[in-house]
Picture 1 (tube, rainbow, N blue to C red):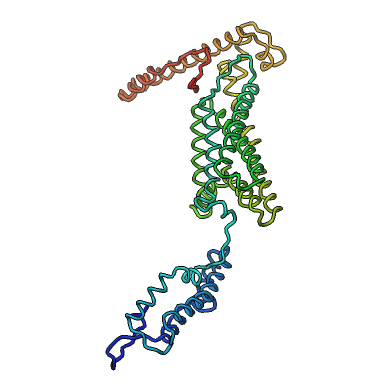
Picture 2 (picture 1 turned 180 degrees about the horizontal axis):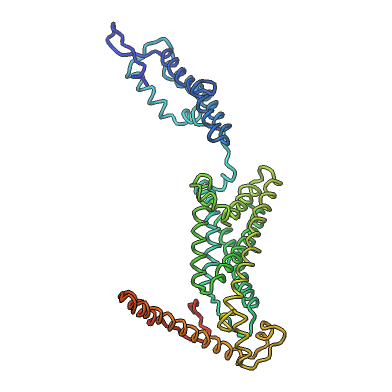
Length: 424
């Protein structure tokens, strides 16, 4: 700054600077970006047109720079130039300026003392807020691991499809309750107990969210016929939660795609609820009613997942469970097999199937699979004949390759249920 405003003293043959000139130059520069100057107005107009939600913040920043900057300049000039009209050479200026800069307390109080208050700051500033993200990850992954430990195989053949579905769900819900309790105890030991009585509210919130996570992941796991595919879908959904679930950055600060996806990620509402408890109710600051309202809103949105996923998952579970038990979920094909085996149909095919003995169930499934095999072989023979006719007409070798591929296709009959997705 000295060399930007320096003057030459011909009599003393040295460069010098006066405090009055120095102060006037800097004040003029500072006033350029004031809220009422041309540049300041241009900045505010741009913010209002493109980011209206930040207009008030931008205006306060400009006003703060104008007022606090003037205060800083006055204090800085008085330190270096006790006499505003005296000539100060470079060695004098350099020594005094370095002394002022080294005095960090003065610099901080004059320039960087911006009125900012962070709720929850007393709990420790390192990673503040990020802990909520990892808590949500822990709950989700804890449920995901259950899909690898447990399996979807039905231990009782006579179990109905919905009994099979909800029995597995109940087992996972009990396990999740134990996992979440252990997680809460760990958090209390690690320091979250500092929030006092609000830690009990945090535990209840974590328990509710983890149970909802369980219902969501269990539903996704049971949607496809192959449980391994369901696990893969759960991991994909986890990735979307990690990227768009408000864990590291608010979604509106990310690409538009992630901002849209964030509304479909349970992490977003789980983290918001935790924040209201830890940094809202836990600090005793702000409006308690507002925190309670936001917590209830987030829980209400999380509960929307349950009926939607249950309807989809239960419907598809019924289909693949029927196919697993009888070889097909086509009631017309099952009716045909029942009639061929002289089994009386009592009012409806579904009721008749529920009243069959274990031996009759095996017979029905075997007959269905044999019928499917015969249909497969018939269709295979028809395709081969069509390819042979086309080859005779065109003599194109590609039809010979297609005939070879069709013949290589096989159809296996397996009447016993296999545990395809268990590591036990």
